Image 1 (cartoon, rainbow over the protein chains, first blue to last red):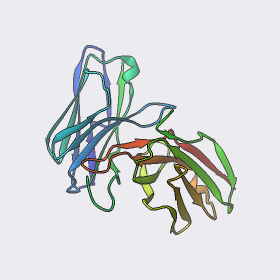
Image 2 (cartoon, rainbow over the protein chains, first blue to last red):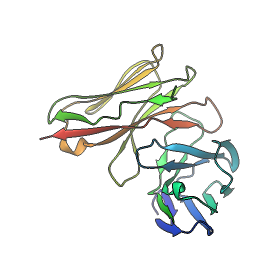
Image 3 (cartoon, each protein chain N blue to C red):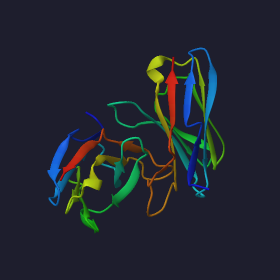
Image 4 (tube, each protein chain N blue to C red):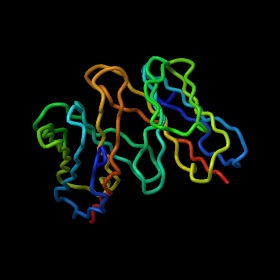
Length: 115
Length: 113
């Protein structure tokens, strides 16, 4: 099993659809993250979960709804998205404390296109 | 003011030369700093992290941190074509609990043969 796995890798959806992105990590980490990467923009932090509790919501619109049922799984539920939400959504995990605090391990990303 | 700032480039460096990448950050309380490399179509991967003022060397890479100036840099010696990528500076803006890691916009580096 690779460290951080994201599914689906590609997703095309209409503005009225509801879909979900899934992330699973096999590294024994306790912190998980969602980032958004758009063309010509920096990686934008969306949500942070630490031991299943949300510790950061970076002013993300409510049409994005995260869920973290346990420290290994993270979901991003999508509904009534806009075309400007088309981007690469990256999941990452890390150990929340310790010498390497903040070293992120990324999944390969889910490329989302909203029509 | 952006939380983490980098020159977007592109930075073009001849093969074998030293590439110098710079980053500034706004939160004076930040404690840990990272350089990630991202190839086109791929996810970022960590290449260096630094916590203490001064230099940290790892092979051809040297990270430099100056907390007083809120400045982080990455030097790549003996640049190779495989070093051509976007380099992302990242700052952990939280001391405890889960990390809040903010990225700069990245500097695109091109190594010309």
